[in-house]
Length: 422
Image (cartoon, rainbow, N blue to C red; front, side, top):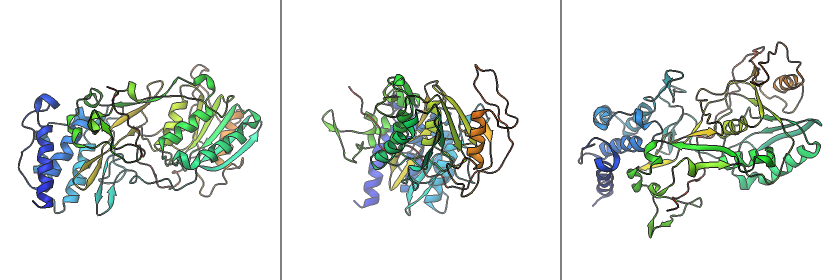
C-alpha cells in the first residue's frame, strides 16, 4: 500500500472512532467513510474542532457545515484547509462585543487559530510558534527608593533566562520598593513558565498557595470525553512518548479539568514589599505578557499606561492531521477573580504615544514620564474613581498607534499537559 493509502486508512479509522454517537454525542453518521485524501483532511479538521475547540458548542453539526462541499473545489488543498480553519474561527460570537472572538487581524487571518505544515509555512493571527527574539531583560533600574523599573522584552525558556531574572530582581529589591513599573511595550509573550516565575518574584510570600490562574477547556474535554484525541500521541516535555496504563499515552489521557489546570503562587525569592504595579503596554503586548498583567490584578493595585494590548486570553495545543499541525483555540486563561474577557485587548488607564527607539528607563521618556506622573498624582487631568474601585479613568492626553513590533508568541509554546492521575 502506498503512503497515501496508508494515510487514508489511518484517517478512516480516526473518523470511524469519531463518528460513534455514543462516544462523542454528535449526529451519526457524522462523515462519509470513503473519499479522497483532501476530503478526509477536511473532515478531520472539522471533527477535531467539534471536540477540542474552545467554542465547539457554537459549531454546527458536520452535515450542516459540510466541509467537503465547501472546500473541495479549491484549486489548492492548502488554501482549502486554511480557509476551513479560518471559517471555523469566525463562528463563535463574543456576546459582549457581538463580534467573533477571533475577529480577523488581517483579511482571512484569524486572531488565534491557524494551520502549519504546508511548504513549511504557517497562517496564523500571531506568528508560528517561534522562540522570542528579544532578551528577557532589556533594562532594569531603581528610579528612587520606592520605585523600581524593569523592561521585559520577552519570556524565553526559563532555563535560559533564570539567572538574568534573579540578578535583575535582586538588584531592584535592594531598596524594598513599594511601586514597580514593568515595561511590556515590546513583549509579544513566550514561555508561560517564565511569566509564572516572574509573577512569583514579584508576589509576596503571603500569596503562596493562592490561585494565580486557571485553564478552562470546553465541557467535552473537561469531562474527558474527547475520544478523537485517542488518535493523537502524547509527548512529554522532552518530546518522548510516555507509557500510561501499559500503553503509549495519547492526548485523550490528559487531565483537562479546571482543577487539574489551576496554577498557584509559589514564592521562593524576590520582592516582598510591592503594593502597586504599573505596566507600560502597546498593541505588541500579547499572550504570556498579558497573562502576567491579568494574574496580578486580583492582588495588586494595577495600572496600565501606553496602548491597548493585543488581546489573547486563550491557549492551544496542536492536532496533527496528515502533514499539518492545526492550532485551534483550546482553553481560556482566567485569573483568580475568574476574569478573562480581554479578547479585544486591555485598554490603558492612561493612553500615551509610543515612541520608536525610546530610551527605556529614562524618566523623561513619554510613557515612563506619564507613569511617574500617575504615581505622584501630577498627571494632567487624571480623574480617579472612588477608592474602593481603585480604577483610574483613561485620560487620553496623547494618542497614537502602537509601535509596529511583530507579535512573537502564539500560545502555550511548551508542553505543560499533565496525564490523568487515575
